[in-house]
Length: 201
Image (cartoon, rainbow, N blue to C red; front, side):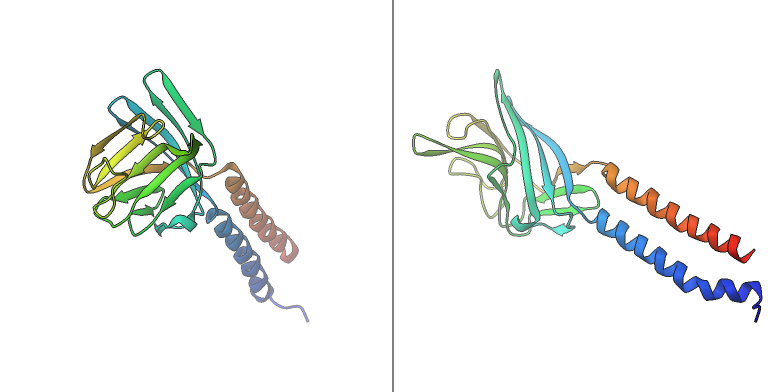
């Protein structure tokens, strides 16, 4: 029996919606992947330029959500860099992500550290940046709610008090692989629709 055109199209719509749903799911999974935030902070003559990679979670971020951290700290003629920092952590409710922006709330109860520790003469030397809060300072020398930028902490560091909520970093545009997935998925849906129309016609 030859069904009217609109009946045949309607019968195929569940398949098209299923395909579109799979594309949307794939895009969602890609978009929910790792997110890298970039920022810089200068205190006195010491500047830290850093990146923080998270698992893509939004809202409050804890240490388990932080995947990697890199930084270059410059103090006058001296410079120290690291990748895959071994002291990247956050506790409490201070660090959180909204959209593509990373914030830290100084009124929280814990720290956000993005740094690297190296043992020198049985001393652990920290290089990086630390956001202290009302509930926890970055070290014995700093008051609560201060930002510390360190080039070999215990030797070369500077800090400054702050208050309220500060921007820690901004995420980059989506990775090219995510854009490619988006374009490929939309093209696949469009091609399926064209094939169906051609078959019905």
